[in-house]
Image 1 (cartoon, rainbow, N blue to C red):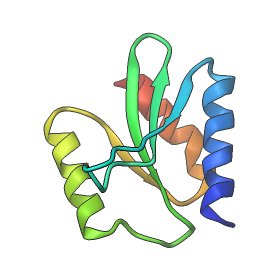
Image 2: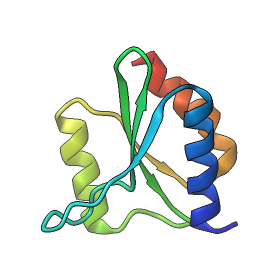
Image 3: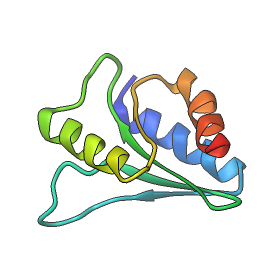
Length: 93
């Protein structure tokens, strides 16, 4: 399965929950996660989508740590079967 397929499944699942899955681009600030997930009741999470078995690059790992140190929840998603649990975790925060 390709990264794009997983990203589409994520966006569809978020839409089904009446949320938004916003593609992030930030010129001059590389390494940000691919998606900002906004769910009802002010729930927010960041998601880096990877092809199955792929890991975060060092700069992506650094950005993940920076965001987590600010209190945000950040996921690396490489398996579409993990989407439901990940969204549940975002809702629980």
